[in-house]
Image 1 (tube, rainbow, N blue to C red):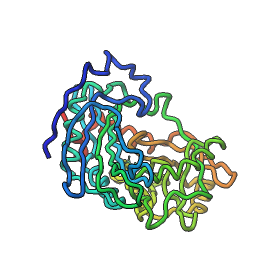
Image 2 (image 1 turned 45 degrees about the vertical axis):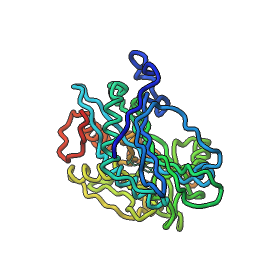
Image 3 (image 1 turned 180 degrees about the horizontal axis):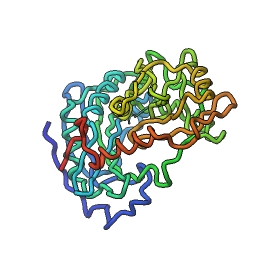
Image 4 (image 1 turned 135 degrees about the vertical axis):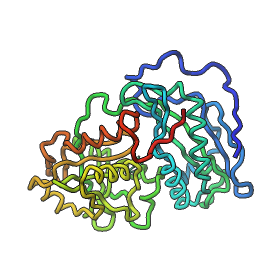
Length: 357
Ligand SMILES: *Cc1c(COP(=O)(O)O)cnc(C)c1O
C-alpha cells in the first residue's frame, strides 16, 4: 500500500527542546499521524501521513455507541548514538489482527502495520526524547466510523497511528505499588473480549480502579470471571509471582491479554535459570504462600512501565506484604535487562529490536 505524504500547514509544533522531565504519559502529540481507511466494497485505501488534527465525525458513528474499537501500544527508543529502534513490533501487528478478528474488524497486513509505523516514526524522529527512561509511545487504533445507529459491524473504518513523547515512568524512583485483589467486579470471562485489546475492556474496569484508589491502592488485580478464584492480570499489565527457583504467571486461556512484555519476561526469566510456570494461580494458595514467605517477589509487566514491582497485595480487608515489601532482585534484574536491550546498552541476543535508523 502506497502512503501519500501530506504537508504540514506551518511550522512544527515542537519549539526548541522539550522539557523531558515534564512529559508525563500521552499528553502531547507529534506533528503528524497516519490515517488509512477501509470500506467493505473497497478494502484498504487512502493511506496517508498527514498533520495531527481532530477527526470530524458524525455523532451517529458506530464507535460512539457500540464501542467497535481496538488499539495497540508500543514504543520507539532513541539510543545515545542516535540509533532508533522498535521493540518486537511484529507481535503488536499480530495481536492487532487478533483483536480485529474478535471485534469483526478488517485485518491490516502485518508488514504494512510495522513498515508504516517505521516510516512515521522516522519522519517524527526529532520528537523522540533522549533522557533516561523516556521514549516515543506509539498508539495504533481502529474505529468504526459508519454513521448508523443500527447495531452491526461497520462498513467503514479508520485505522490511525498517533505518537506521543513520554517521560520516564519511574521519574520518582522504582517504587513498589499496592495492588487490591478485586473480588466483586470482573474484567473478562471465557468467551468474552479479555484477550482483545479493545477500549470496552477498559471502560468496564474503571469503577474497580476508582474504588481501589479510595482504599489507598494503586491498581486492581483481577480474578477470573467465573469462580472469582484464579489470578488473571492487573489493569494494563500481566502479573508474575517469583518463588525461590520459579516464576509463575497466569496461562493464556482466553481472558487475559497476551502481553509482549509478558512473553519477553518469560524468555528472560528462563534464560536466567528460573523455571517458568504458566498455570492457574489460586488466590487462597497464593495468599498462604505469601504469608509463609514462599513468594519472594511480585511484579507486573507491560509496555508503558516495563516492570512494576508490587509490594503489597490487599484482599478482603487484609494487606499482605510481599517479600520485604521492597524491589526484589529478579524484578530489578528483569527491568534492567529489558530496558538495557531497548536502549542498546545490552546486546539484543533474542533478536527483538527492529532498527529504524
Ligand atoms: C496492553 C495490555 C497489557 C500489556 O501488554 P504489553 O504488550 O506487554 O504492553 C496487559 N494487559 C492488558 C489488559 C493490556 O491491555
